[in-house]
Image (cartoon, rainbow, N blue to C red; front, top):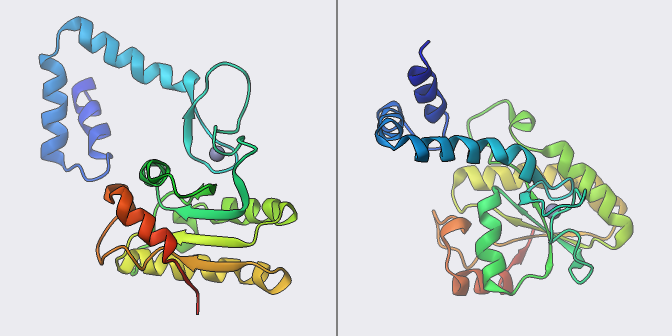
Amino acid sequence: MSSLDNLIRHFEQFPGIGSRQAKRFAFHILTLSQTDRTELGSLINSLNDTVIECTSCRRYFTRNGGDTTLCGICSDPNRDRTKLLVVERDNDITPIERSGVYDGLYFVLGGTIPLLDGKEASRVRSNGLKHVTEERLPQGLSEVILGFSVNPDGENTARFVEQLLIPYQAAHTIIITYLGRGLSTGSELEYADPETIKSALKGRTKAS
Ligand SMILES: [Zn+2]
């Protein structure tokens, strides 16, 4: 396989990118100047050293020197450790932080579980979520908020996480709430505006 074909194959793995768009990206790179191409290559390369996954919430963050493995949110002593907001992707955190109304911690599940899929647990970080829950319970964790997209896959994922947390609910006083109300059907957190997020957080509902 030529390096061009290989590059196209990589772009095809990007979320929402088909083979036609993958080819367009690859051919666009060919039209760049040699300097830009080199810069792009070294930028991607540098991610290995500068960006790491937070060992607690699992979001990616830029490590500004030092050897911390916790992101700025997880290592902030002022964050409310009684709340854990579970989201699908890294990108969901940015609009919530921008809305300025949430001061708890996060966990990035890494995706959703499609409604029609048997391989549930392998698709998302279920063990990671269990681990974080167990770690946070002694620190006073009392509410797990599920912030998934308002669509069938998001709802299926919410049911999956509820099941996953049942053992902890029985043994501890934690409640599960949903961001769902306030977000309209089909909406994704990533694209929600600050006002929508504010009302979704204020109007979050308890699992029945
Ligand atoms: Zn973190």
